[in-house]
Image (tube, rainbow, N blue to C red):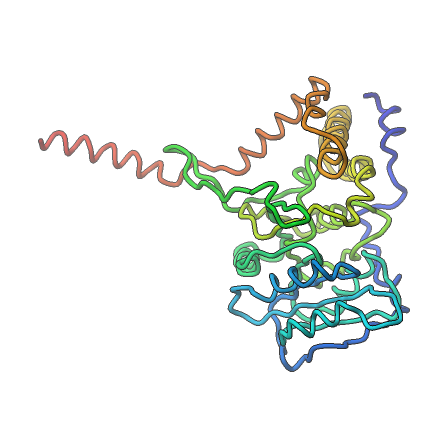
Length: 366
């Protein structure tokens, strides 16, 4: 793919994910009222779980309970920010009251802020130094917060992105992400987390917003969520945060992502082009020849298009086989690179040699 065709297919937006332009001013004129919860009941939370909600009451109850029932031993708050825009009482508030947890803070906006504005308002209202997110139809595993905060202590204020399981609308497992099989032969050990760089973000978006941990002040410093990057605003946010503060991939699944009737279903045809545009912006920061970057972008674009159609549309696995041979080679190379990132030389190599020596000594004694 030559440079001219690259620019036509994947035009570089005039805006920049690295600009640190604040998006919070866009929602400054809308008030949010605390209708449930008391700051006194959760005075100094260590982490805030932001739950942007709208109109999925049937799934929201299950999602909220998954966040309430965490094994985390320190104070945390659940910030429910509601975009419900009808005149009557929100069914989401009734669910919050039914659950009745004292660490829930429920806010109702005067008007609908949109998804990204809702997330940004949640960041503003959060009182903990660290924030993570849970959508109103997805599920935290019971140890999600414990795992995230354990990694935060080890890695500092880097963005922590997590692998996940996928479920269908009824909660059935579609993709059961494996827990690390730590030992792989005598010399390799699988990491439970590894550094996730801007280059990694270029090759493949880190993950979803849910289950990602950020330092709240740093999230505000880079400007928050920007609707200009729809439908991949979470990717844009993670890229910016990773560039300025670093990133970590948590290799232990901590949540279940629901594939069902949601915003992703209506926007999936735009995923591939939106990803490619952000990759073009990332490419400016990479010291890699442009011709190679453009080849990777093209291959990734076609792969994401296939996966989006398979996941959210009517596509099937045969679409992957229709990719060009060079695109399949690039994807296989990436998967190999990812595996190499996930493993390290087994720390017991020295011990292995010692054991071999001990066995020889035992034989000599016999």
